[in-house]
Image (tube, rainbow over all chains, first blue to last red; front, side, top):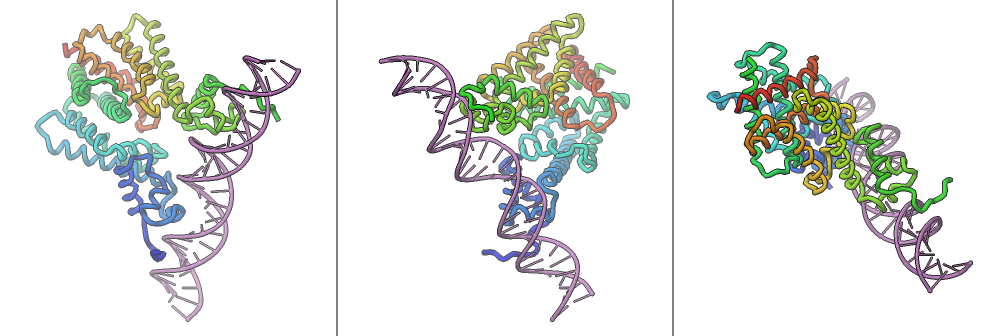
Length: 190
Length: 190
DNA sequence: TGGCTTAAACTAATGCCATTAGTTATTATT
DNA sequence: AATAATAACTAATGGCATTAGTTTAAGCCA
């Protein structure tokens, strides 16, 4: 059998393996047993590097939020010509669709109020706040609008993933309709 | 010890116990072990009446969707004077807040495409379609609008429950803002 | 009444899982 | 070369769902 190397894994490698597990087999397959198997060690050894399964899920959540942030940022940079909020919305939905396991991790941190998790999330809030600035809303209204957008798109992706939309009606069209309608409302609010 | 009664439980009693467990201790506490304890039988005995844990979760989902439907219906009947969609939205959020365990069950059926689950859900869709009829949208647009409303409110409640809103900004205000803005958009769309 | 059938309980076992305690062995340091 | 630190390990515990096979209570029918 393979020798017992003193340093076989570290926190980075565990998170990477968790990412691959989430991407390849889904969020619910991110278990210490599966991680250990992927890293060729025994489950208890993981505790030398990370704080159990909750530790893994926290790190995975932060990773996912950062990845989502990157995807959103790219989307804004790319198509500067169109309405940035629409671009943002589609990029968000695209991310959730492409990487469902990681997306699920983003809102399943063991403690959502955790400092690091909140910090990662607030970057996204800032990004959306920037994109919404052209609507010249008041401070409070802008925050309400960001919450609204986040709720809409998260709800949409979450329902879509769970197969909640029974009807045979194009989902991309639904997303565009929803966001555009909300933005119309924001405009008329002025 | 108590005698081994031939008929101690039935499907109804199991579902009722599951409801109490979800309401009292949360959705994740709905386990066969806890159900068996609550009913004073052993876990395997539950299989005489229901199809394992998936069976319990399916029934709980249907129960929850029906309860949600009832709450929404009551809300519409009660305040006929105001905008029914706003009343619906608050009733939805109120339900999710009052019975988080049951609400969670509504979108965690083992198979969301299940006939019975879909049937229960479609009643809610009809209810919302009725309430939105005053906006005189086309057939497709009306369906998009219902999807949008559902996504918004579900996303909102889900994020609120998970503690996703870090900021200290009134959440009811956010909900009202979001729905009102969407409805404004629907109006201006005409 | 007495025996038979049905079915709802049971026990026992399997195989997952996370986690903790305590041990071994490798690597680095003194 | 001895020692300290640490990353693996094994063993054990306790939780969970689930299946197979067994007992026994209840109802029915001759």
